[in-house]
Image (spheres, protein in one colour):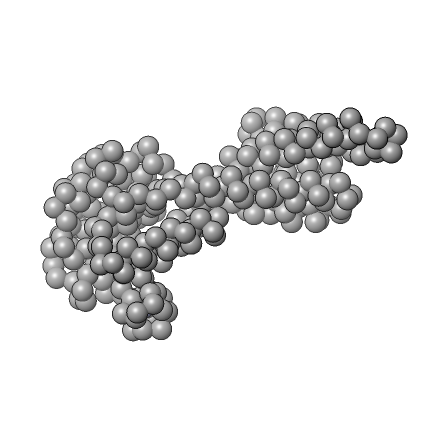
Length: 270
Ligand SMILES: [Zn+2]
């Protein structure tokens, strides 16, 4: 996931170096943490005064890192509401009419898919006639919940496919190694900790992991069964046991049992 994100960062960095200023960016997919990280990185890069951005040391970077950069505007769903409402976008557009303190504003809209239709339409007007001194960054895990007209005004980056597929594949590979070597419970659990703690979409990630696990175990099982007879009997029984446990875990995940509980049970059984 880091690799994919740093590729995106390099791409943005070099387009900024070429003086290409885009008025709106959208980052979709990935985890909430990944989206926030890259969104904040971009805003800081836009403010940074150094040659190599973001430097982390110039006045702008320091202000940003301390959470008091005058031209940084964060828009998010109020705690007591279900969505980002039109009034919030109106407030934003009013503010953008004023001159920024420095050279430009950077606006970060978290969970942009929570903007209701009225809010998105209002934002669209701003995107269509961008204030030259503002860059708007949208973060969302539901690309389809954003109006196509809004997306079409943004340079879009998807953090999803490459990232999560890689991540769960890698975890499955590690876990199979541990299963085959008869490793302790806590070692296996450690590999799955990242999914267990995921606040965003642990269920989808667990399912991806289980699919990857099943594929790897089945491939090994096939290899062992067609291999050298008696010597592999133990491995075969271990592998078939693991496949059974994986299938069961997937059933539980689909039946909406707790992801953490299901994955821990899996670690105990394999
Ligand atoms: Zn800086």
